[in-house]
Amino acid sequence: MKDVKVLGPGCKRCAATAEMVEAEARKLGVSVTIEKVTDYARIATYGVASTPGLVVDGKLVHAGGVPKPEDVRSWLKES
Amino acid sequence: MSAPLAANARPSQPGAALWIGATVAALVLWVVLYSQLEPFSIWFVGRLPVRPGAHLHEALSFFALDTPKVLLLLTVVVFGMGVVRSFFSAERTRAMLAGRREGAGNVAAAALGIVTPFCSCSAVPMFIGFVSAGVPLGVTFSFLISAPMVNEVALGLLLALVGWKVATIYLGFGLAVAIVSGWVIGQLHLEGWLEPWVRDLRTAAVDLTAQSLTPVDRIRAGLDAMRDIVGRVWLWMILGIGAGAVIHGYVPTELLASIMGRGAWWSVPAVVLIAVPIYSNAAGIIPVVEALLGKGAALGTVLAFMMAVTAISAPETVLLRRVLSLRLIAVFIGVVTVGILAVGYLFNALI
Image (cartoon, rainbow over all chains, first blue to last red; front, side):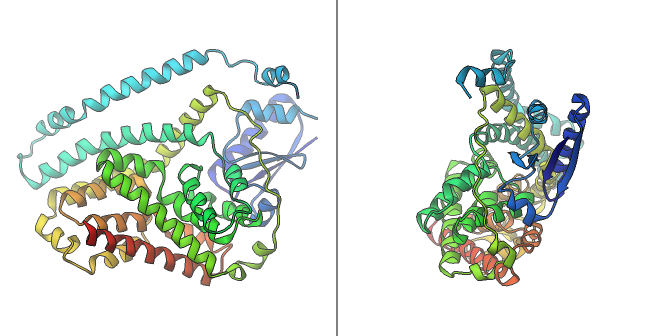
């Protein structure tokens, strides 16, 4: 079970990121919980300065734009 | 991770040569199209049932030439910007600025504002991210002022539509406004005016730049930026060109010169006052700038107008209210406005 958090104040690209993570997880057959973190204070505690950001299992893996599908796949596969 | 393994992590990027070749071909096509714009617009407007020399004819000529021209320019500038920006990130910029002293830090922040990816929608996370990682408040403001005002889109379009002299002046004075305004805010020591939760937040500056990019990745970053930004600003751009066309075709030169010319001392504060609540990005405002300059408006007045429209916008201010107290927002707007007024007056006096 992967715990994924999408950091972003609710912009279009944040929604696109969340959808993409969900789609890639389904393709890989990895079960995920996706949480959208929209609160600025919580976003900042992960240390990002640009959104959308992506946190997988508590670790920040990406910030500043919609990630690439192949990168998302590699993050979801890592255990 | 060993080097060969790192290379294997990104196994198939077949056809890097193909990508680069296609990019070069697209650029050649671009140059050919661009060179045909003027004959095309003359031919196009000539087929319309309007009398040459009429106001409508003038306005349509402006619109028919500027629409494809700005669209083409915007496309190539934004593509180039996306490629350049793939070398920078907000996180890396922050790491460079964290712990900098005021002064040199303000200069670095304003300069990094030109190349760091920025959109007003992410102004707030960026602001918090900078301040919480130990970037001084004044330095953060220098960045926040410079990023939307002096960027490649503004500079690229000014260069192509108005000329290199005005573009250089805009670059120099835009940076000066960002540096000085940020420095002044820093000297006022207003950290106490941040919302308390922002002030107390402390985070480590993370750096994600471990992701190494290939040339193909950078071309794709350029294409992504192109899709994203052109998709977002084309409407503003058309509106701006429409406004420019109306000015070009209908506003009498004498009238505009008497309102926005150098003789009218009050025109600088007047345009800044009008511009502060207006929101537009550089792509929307530059066709208006082009038309105003063509009609004899003073350069300082027009530059002040453009800076005020791009640097301070109502939506961004509303977003910033989440993290700044009203007093701090007022100081921010006040200091930037004074800076822009100074640029306007200085220019009108010098040239």
